[in-house]
Structure formats: structure tokens, C-alpha cells
Length: 273
Length: 158
Image (cartoon, rainbow over all chains, first blue to last red; front, side, top):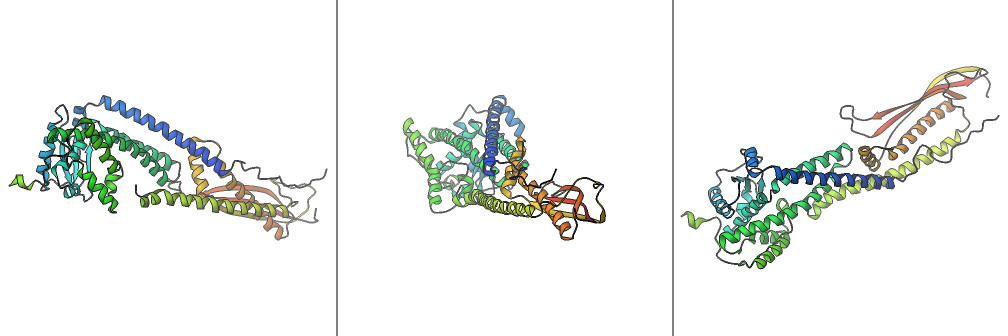
């Protein structure tokens, strides 16, 4: 017998699957997995909200302040607190004890946090020029409490963390994983913002008898956005201001609310004197 | 999300992935072509895993030879392999890497032995080690493949 050396026809130890086919297979699998996890988390959060009444939440989170650089001596602190109290009075059946803090941050923003904590940035107060607009921003945050969105928000952070670790555990591109997650969840977030808007506008209408100037802040947002000034903090998780104005104006028309009326300046210098 | 952030968050990572895929594929293809033609040129050179020689061989001299290669996978395939690692299964995108490394290391071993005038290599072994950060287990997804064996020169050519 004679030995005849011969090479195999092709790379026998390498799978024939094209890398791009393999890529789509694993990506589809990953997307499916993430979708499943999202559904489970959303479901778990809805259950959680049902089992955590407001009093319990306030008890757990009282004294919890996640934001640094708070400005308790902000000149407008008292006036904002008074305005908040007036808006809360329009929502008599709330079980929350609201706390208000002003944070030293030039970016205009407002947050609703677990335990009835509302944080307004000093940048927002600098930008606001009518009381009616600020009343709407505060009522909008109350709307988040009404819908228990801040608890959903916690779930969202949990979801982001989970996705993030899944992607980093796979040693993959964490930047893309994180951003896809973030963008998906912002979709949920925008729906919540719309609901909070509706609740907030209702409170403003009850307090002032009209919704005039309440949407002024959005108008400014959209003007400045067109002029190229960046409002990343507020815009990222929120719907387009133009859409919000259109939607809320439509809501007011449906309910027969007055679109204009008496408007008060902010800061309320006249009343302090 | 404004366009600049969007490009920064998605565009750049995707561009890096695409470049990695294209360059990685070209390099892999070229390497396989080189491996195949060099394998053809050493065909017929006896290489064995036996640790003892056929009895009729009269060995004049013997020497240890080693062929080593360090090779890495492109970023695109590494990511696909990473995602595959979540579910398990055959990590198909790693197979070409291992195959290239094994064959390249063998080629280097054989080419050296042949250039030094030896007639065969016996007792050939392959060793793989991962080139990665020992602490975190992360880092370069490269491997080192070492092929070594005893090259023998015979009294009379087979």
C-alpha cells in the first residue's frame, strides 16, 4: 500500500455558516430574550404598584434624597412650596406627603421621586417667567405620582441594569446595548409623560379656571430647540414639545376649558411686597 | 436624542463594527489562502504524533522544533461570539480562528524543520493558550498556538 498525501477540499474544522448569518441568528435570539425580560419586568412592576400603597411608599422613602447639591436656601424655595401646596389642594384624595427640594443645576428639569419627593432645578426656576407655567410643571410631577410612574421608573432602571449586564457579560458592545435599551425605554417614558401632562393640566385648570400660559414652558422649549440651544435633559425622555402642546390644546378644547385668562408673573415679586 | 448624540452613540460603534468585519474577513481570507498554498508545498513531509519511530529508521540526529503563532479575532466576530455565549451552542465564529492558529503553527514547525534539512517530525503536540488579562479574564481575544515536536534526520532518505 502506498501512502498518498492529499489535502481535504476545504476547511473541514470551520463551520460553513456565514458569519453574517450567525450574527443575525444570535442577534434575533438576543432581541427575543430582551423582549421577554422586558415583558416580565413590566408585569412585575404592575404587580408591585398594586401591592405598595402610597402610605407604605412614603414611609419607606421619607428622608431619602438622591440628589446632591440641594439649595434649601434658594430665594424662591418658599414661593415654590406655596404654589405646590395650592396645586396639591386641587388633588384632595392624595395620600402622599409631598416634599419639595430645589437642586443647584443649570439644566431646566423637574423630577418626581419615590416617597413624594419633587425636585425642581434652579435652572428651571430661572427660565420660568409665569406662575401658571410653573404650576403646570409642578402639577405634571404630581401627575407622575398619581400614575405611580416613579415606581415604574425604578423598574426601568432595574431593566436597564439587567440589559446592560447581559450585554456586558456577553463581552459585546456595551455602548450599543445600553443605547438600544435606553431608546426603547424612552418610548415607555414618553407615554407616561403624556399621561402626566393630562393630569397636570387638569389641576391647573381647576386652580386657575383656564390653562393660559401653562404651556408657555413647552413653547419656549420648542423655540429654543429650533434656535439650536440644547435641552437634552428635558427632551431626551419627554415627547416633542410641539406634540405636547397640540395634544394638550386638543384636550382643553374637548373639555371646554378656557384657553386664556389671568396670568401671574414669576417670581411673584408683587405679592412678597 | 439629537443627531450628534445619535451618531456618537450608534454611528461610531456601528462603523467600527463594519470596518472590523470587512478588514477581519479580508485578513482571514488571505491567511487561509496562504495556509492552503503552503500546506500544498510541504505535502508529503512526514509528521507524526507517535512518540517512537518506525524500527527501520536509522536516525542520524534529532532536534526539538517549535512553531508558534499568536492570532486574534476581529471585533465583529468577537461580539457575535459573545452573544452566542449567552445562549450556548457552537461558537462558529471562533472556529476559523482556532483552525488558522493550528495550521499556521504546524506550518511554521514543519517549514523550519524542513529548511534545517530534517526528514520528518515525530511526537508532534499542540498547545493552546489564551492571550487575555489574567485578572479580569477580559482583554485581547487572541490565542497562542504552539506546535512542537522532534525533528529527525535519517541515515538514508526514505
